[in-house]
Image 1 (cartoon, helix red, strand yellow):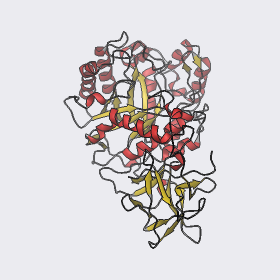
Image 2: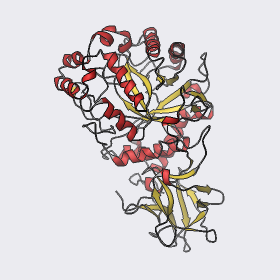
Image 3: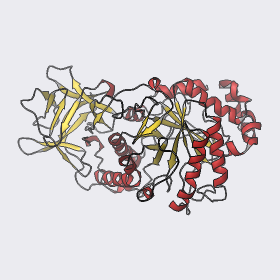
Image 4: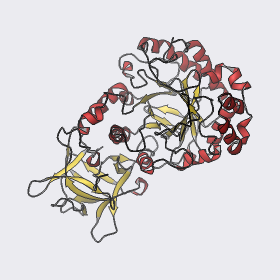
Amino acid sequence: MARSICLCIFLLFITWIPILSTSFPLSTKTRWIVDEKGQRVKLACVNWPAHLQPAVAEGLSKQPLDSISKKIASMGFNCVRLTWPLDLMTNDTLARKITVKQSFESLNLFDDALGIQIHNPKILNLPIFNAFQEVVSNLGQNGLMVILDNHLTYPGWCCSDNDLDAFFGYPNFDPVIWAKGLGKMATLFRNVTNVIGMSLRNEPRGTRDYPDLWFRFMPKGAEAVHAANPEVLVILSGIDFDTNLSFLRDRFFNVSFTDKLVFEQHWYSFSHEGGAWVKHNSNDICAKIIGEVNHNGGFLLDRGFPLILSEFGTDERGVDVSGNRYMNCLVAWAAEKDLDWAVWALTGDYYLRTGTKHMVETYGVLDATWKNVRNSTYLQKLSGIQHPFRGPGLQEKKIILHPHTGLCVTNNHSGNVPTLRLELCTKSEPSTFNPKEGILWINKMCVETPDVAGQKVKLGVGTKCSKLGQISATKMHLSFKTSNGLLLCLDVDERDNSIVANPCKCLTKDALCDPASQWFKVL
């Protein structure tokens, strides 16, 4: 990591609303998800896979269910996107006649069966579906909302273009059976208040993923869910691995209900041009890809429909340069749009993935013990977008977010002269920035930039306010010129999180340069 981390600034509107204040059921109000009182509820979710063999939520052989639920809440998430295979609703033998113990032992997962006996003896001899119900119930007991995501047809790993259940009409994806399965799941959780939504199908894809087929069958699944459980949000994914909803620009989706309809979109570093994040200057490629993401799905927000970024994430070991650069860009976009979201994934490791036992999930926020956070820096980055910035019923508070760290800018009161530093966003002071004037204010004190690189940025009472400009393709650098004409940008000294001024980086086409430390996004 570089010696100095420049500040990516977002002027945001934040109110910190605890999940316990939520009044169910949820519905939609233009682009927002709101509670029964009409107040914004921001979904900050984590994906918890339960769709692989043996069709049991991952990790229960490592830790007690209640411990995992409490860990999810302690990490700042208020919601779980819990995946499930359609077979759980269409195959009564799997759902009702096979116990958890039998399912594991049939796959020679004897050590996991023993682990469940030790950590979760209550579910060991339950049928598979009843164990699934126990997970949902325990999440609710810990104040966590649940989105039930139909991930695929039969238990296993997902996803590739040649999967037999990739799209409507494929050998293992019968639209009629699918709609019936959705309706059955919706019925079974009709009176479970913490189940706030159902995602109809994960990542439709393949050579047949035509919009015409999507329009033909997706409404039937949506209507099946709403008819069975009119309280839940009905969440629809697009095509091309759920990266593309652009076909809704000219032809919209018609259903009998309006205030429960939500769309979802996925975005990974590999969702676009291969190797783009290391082939191009990050300023340029970030601006380009954000444009594509907005075109493919983000436009729905402007048209008054909620959009959940229901899968994103990267290798948390820090070795993936593309993933690291993409995540800084994504957090910037998610903050700008104030999105609801679900990160992939909670998983420390899998019982069985593509034939391999205990495969570690490097995208998982927990490590293989299912007890410890895999990467606290990554989790801190997510914390910057876990709380609502604006929306119905919220008191707006302008803040400055640093996406690279998930921290916010505030006044450093420790010295004789007020300066800037990073702090938890919940402790940050109000901030405003007028792009036309170029003046940055922190709690009624304006920024006074130094005339020499490396020095701390001070705050004054308004007599020497510095004018800042926005440069680069992303408009995410805040820059200024010194008295001798040197162009500097705001930066962060990682030794103490103080904000300093340093020469602006990555303004050329150099693909090796990573500008994330000097990105600013003014809203």
